[in-house]
Amino acid sequence: MTTTVPATTTAAGPLGDRETDAREKDIMRFRVVSGPDLTTRNDAYLAWQLDRQQADLWPYFRRYDTALTTRATVVSDTGVITEGPNFGGQDYLSLTGHPAILDAAHQALRDYGPLTAGSPALGGATPVSRALEAGLAEALRTEHVALFPTGWASGFGTIRALMHRRDHILLDKLSHDSLRQGATASGASVEFFRHLDNDAVRRHLTGIRATDTTHAVLVVTEGVFSMDSDTPQLAELLGICREFGAQLMVDVAHDFGAMGEFGGGQLEVHDILGEVDFVVGAFSKTFATTGGFLATPSASAREYVRMFGGPQTFSSAITPVQTAVAHASLSIVNSPEGARRRAAVAAVATRLREGLTARGMEVMGDVVCPVVPVLIGDTPTGRTASGLIARAGLVAHLVEQPAVASDAARFRMQAMADHSNADVDTAIDILDTCIRKARQQTAR
Image (cartoon, helix red, strand yellow):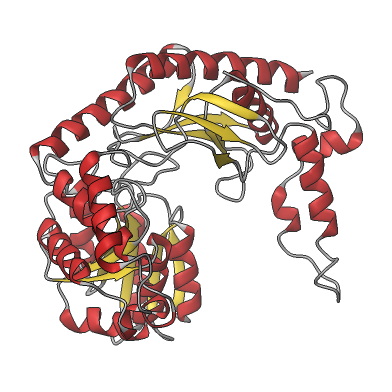
């Protein structure tokens, strides 16, 4: 482990007013600003960000100087170098360095080049695109698939295209930003229900259908909520939607491919593969590349989204290399090797959860999945711990507001199939030591 300390970093010690502000103040106070000059009215935010950087309290925009493997080198904006176990990367089945994945990428580059011809609507597809769509349809037991340039675009674009004014959208209150923004942009009426509460969904639907039986209702949830590592009762939720003539959308970004005996994620676990109206997901967690998809049994919905989903018409398609990598990854996911890798990442996550719990830390969630959230609570402690952890040689990401509430900061540990027991045990030791030290420092 090597650490480079920039000259501008403030040593630990009594905090001045600006350092206290950097440690304790909420980032959301800068979310809405006013003033006539767009080039200067965010100067106060920049000053606060720089204060956080100098106080070793800024965990964002670090870069990887090595490949995305179980041990990596990460460099911060201020030059702090972290070398050690990597629990910050999203490569659940450890496929990014797999020989078959690299071969597929090289072959696609040779066959089709590095760039798509345009958006999906204007020549952005290749034969590999069609093969990937067919493979996803088979894996998800549905008929119609559309590819998107990112996972974010798949959720946003699908909701934005399908839903209109006077329609209704019900979202789990912890739904991903892409789903929330798509709902807002659609112009439909938007309501949020209590996290994982199917009874609340029923109450919302009862109220909506009491006054409106002519417009669409879309219920939106996720297979696994990565910030909390929990999952809804999906079969029951689907039944409630059917009862009220509503449609269900499930975002499977974190579970498809990485969970389930055959890789079908929570839809497989809950025995509803092929029954959900709209399934959206991302390739960036399990499939070794970026991109996203919509899968649906409705041919007309797929074609409508392909025409009116903004990223389908007005954004370049995912590249041939990305498409080929996702397709090759899907082949591994569907194979006996994929099953072995899912078992391996589950074992890593279990060892991590049990080891952290044994040290007295609060591990969130009720499902063993590749994401292991470690609750810190107050934001100042989380920020302090983040700086300490980076210098101790562990790659791990702090999650604070706006991603979670100000009193619910956490580290979102992301397991990989190739993590060793030594990697896990080192991570546990560093987290335990640094979080305890951070609590002592912020308690002064």
